[in-house]
Amino acid sequence: MKKSTSQPSFFFKEGDPLSALFTAASEGIIICNNKGIITSVNPMGEKIFGYEQGEMNQQPIEILVPNSLKKTHVSFRDSLIQNPKMRTKGDGKEFQAQKKDGSTFFVEISISPLEVEGKRYFTAFINDVSKRKIAEKEVIEQRQLLEYYADYAPAAIAMLDLDFKYLVASSRWKKTILNEKKEWVDVIGMNISHDPHFKEEWKRIFAEVIKGNKSGVQLDYINRNGEGNICLEWEAHPWYNNEREISGIIIFAEDVTTRIENEKKVAQYLQELISKNRELEDFAYVSSHDLQEPLRKIRAFGDRLQKKEKENLSEKGQDYIERMLSSAERMQQLISDLLRFSRISSKAKPFGEIDLNQILNDVISDLEIAINEAEATINYPQLPCIKGDATQMRQLFQNLISNAIKFRKENVPPIIDISFSKDESDENCIHIDISDNGIGFDQKYSDRIFQIFQRLEGRKYNGSGIGLAICKKISQRHGGDIKASSEINKGTTFHITLRTDSNNNSL
Image (cartoon, rainbow, N blue to C red; front, side, top):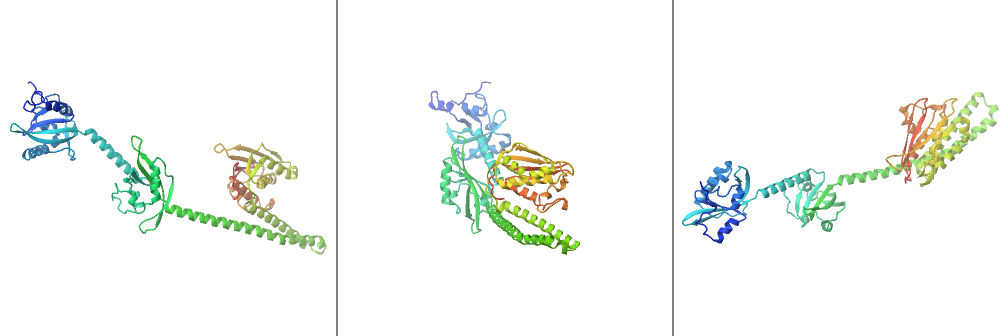
């Protein structure tokens, strides 16, 4: 059977310009009679629905409607026949249509009734909007995803256009910034400058952001409708469209009221703690200094009794005098150590460039007699220069080397090895180890030995139990720390960490 032509002869005469327009139209055009039979289709209409030339002619219009919508479409067609009127595009009317291969897609349709030779026809102008629908769907999905991220982000987020109107406002933004109890309230399209909390200074900042600059972190106090001030930490950035053009501003904000209040409290507590520590250090210094004079008198009168009245004293009396003088000597040593401990912070010197080699040589020279008597050997490498307190560094090395000599094994000459290394992860940090072959101690006491007045060996060895506490405090003042590893009868190693660039002038 021969296929019919693309348009009936009674619509267009040969050479009629309208025939050329019908054929060349960029929209699909379908003409039906009042029974819903297709009488003519232009080439674009056939292309949109996937038919060959003439295949659609004399077919019911329902071939272009999905099965699920056919009944609805028949009712619509009957209504249109009974009440013919123009249905224009642009009124939001989009329909789902069906191609020859059965696939469905969205079209936008406008319908116009017309009469030709006393017969009624309907002309449908059709645009395939499936690509637009896909793009719109992607935009909606992206917007939903953006709103999802905005709602669950830890900060309150808002996106504005170039006129400072809301495009996105997270629920946290509504609750925190707008003080809106109902998170579903829509603020999209509202101008942020109309908000009662808005500050004029923000306009200037926003104007700079639109030029492509970041706002930097801002800190502002705003009043929330009589609920008191909150401290708001926020920053704004420009956001860009697909053409890399600035299209608005995105703002990240956080209520930091609690954090700021806590920081103020911590600063206040820290200041109080520093003040109390100063008071304690001053008290320790003054008290220790004031105790020196009575002790001197006790020792002086004890010496006189021992020398001038010895013959008049019984053996028991002489024993009492010796015990008194011994106790006074230990007390004076304790006070002297306590004074040194308190002076680490209160009487500390400013940091300067010091050569640890010179420090170590001075200490070895000062301890020459003790080293020779114990027949000790000290091995050490070339040490670096650091910024620090030379007096305290000398005290640190002297305490540790003295301990190594003091706590030696009986009849075993002490061997003291000093090693040095740089920290692999921090170029301004060094490690110094001081090891000995002495009596050692149980590792479970490795923390306790650095506490003030703590001793492990009782009266067998002289000392106040302050020396290692002083070492700890000196190490920490120089940006580091000190720890110990030991084993009974196998010696001890003190691990010292120091910073070469420390600029700390107080503990």
